[in-house]
Amino acid sequence: MKEITVFAPATVANVSCGFDVLGFAIDGIGDTMTLKKVSEKGITIIAIEGADLSLETKKNVAGVAGLAMLEALNADFGFEISIKKGIPLGSGIGGSAASAAAVVFGINQFLDEPLSLQELAYFGMKGEAVASGNEHADNVAPSLFGGFTLIPGYDPFEVISLPVPSELYVTIIHPHIEIKTKEAREILPKYVSLKDAITQSGNLAGLISGLYTDNYELISRSVRDVLIEPHRKQLLPHFDSVKELALTNGALAFGISGSGPSMFALCRGELKALELEQHLTQFYQRKGLEIDGYVSKVSRNGSRIL
Amino acid sequence: MKEITVFAPATVANVSCGFDVLGFAIDGIGDTMTLKKVSEKGITIIAIEGADLSLETKKNVAGVAGLAMLEALNADFGFEISIKKGIPLGSGIGGSAASAAAVVFGINQFLDEPLSLQELAYFGMKGEAVASGNEHADNVAPSLFGGFTLIPGYDPFEVISLPVPSELYVTIIHPHIEIKTKEAREILPKYVSLKDAITQSGNLAGLISGLYTDNYELISRSVRDVLIEPHRKQLLPHFDSVKELALTNGALAFGISGSGPSMFALCRGELKALELEQHLTQFYQRKGLEIDGYVSKVSRNGSRIL
Image 1 (cartoon, rainbow over the protein chains, first blue to last red):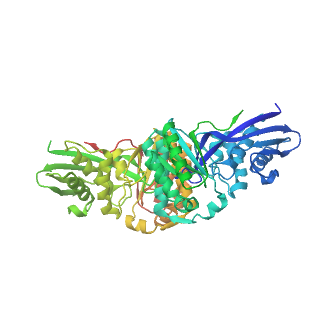
Image 2: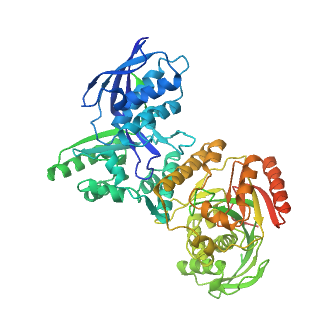
Image 3: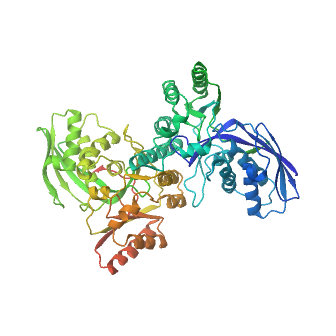
């Protein structure tokens, strides 16, 4: 085998109560990457389609993630990669993470002793740092593993694959505004009240329990964010109104996807998710804002060979 | 039926990563209470054995919890209760919560339409407030339910019963020093760094996942406390040394039980827990400090009729 094409899905990170530790994969949207093994060491990016991104290896998340992996493996070969971005840049559904996931997943297919998905997530995270300015894996992990993933800790680095209730769907709303991940981080407070920290940890614990027990009501009560959303929502036009609209139209929960601008609504069943997409799309149209909407199962599928 | 005797077990609250939201029940230690239904409304405490506590209803956790329940039910009857404290006062293993659990559990046996354990925990919490100065249910819930309980939120108030891995044992070390719950609260910071809050929520999420999947290694890595222990450990003589001793002698995790002074070590298997009890007891003896040690399964049994 000299060449392979892989797909890595878009993802929703944070999921309101799991800032920097939780994420899930979306079906049908993602980045596609072709990797060609070459004798020259390193990563050469020969083409990027669908986005205006640097071809320079060290300025590109896929380049950095791939290099980190090849260097750690002490590989005496390299790759030429071409990337087809299926995830709009800066949309907040894990575009850079998908490219990072794709490159490490792709390289892994060429190894005599392939790495585990957790090890791949670690190298993927190295690429992510280029985009976000800090190393976190809450997008790259679900893009690799699929489903819900939890990163209980970074020291040691660990990824836990969580069960996905079968009727769990998501509606994604992507308003066409730009939020830089770095800026979305800078808006956050350095300190939070102990009381809010405890409330948030109870929410996250409730969500984890709800996922293990298919308890949609508990999931609904738990996907709430008292730490991050109160600060970031000001970056999103009409956030409070659209959240209320979602919750009064049957969404289990509504929040900011990653650092935005995309927002997600968890729904029970595809029909509910599709109805909600309509409601929310119409809301933004009335406001004169351009948006995209997607509906997807919370997907058990992670990165895969095409 | 006019009279009943019930038992409510001791409990470990917080469990390092679950401040105010998590707790588990201990086998064999607890409070015993006899309740006699009488025509006079309210709660009359006729005797308390094993501790020097107020017989005045409104100054006693069992009195307050029982009253809260009877008033909410608009009961036209009352109870005479006698309490046998099996849990040393101020030991940090849920002594006041056990009395609160016992009274609401006992009253419930006399009702035509008994309340759920979650509803009982709510009234038990009202009694707890007398002892701790704030309403929380992380001791009273496991004393009623048994096993591990999670309180994902107080608004709405909810208790989730979590699975207990079958080989999970606990060694309790109770040094004979006094720590007032209110003081232990006052030592805590009002604000914590967002980074620590996220670390802690990852720990709690990891523990919840570990309990659902019988993953002792994950439990071990997750029962860690970066928010509370760093402040409270100064109240406990030799805390760092004894923690290190526990962890190097096979404990999965070690921490402060509730607001102390008791400490707990989680162990896999009874033998390990018994060995550890010896090590830790000897350590304190060498230091000239008086302590009690207990070993128990993390018990699936909550409050029960004797």
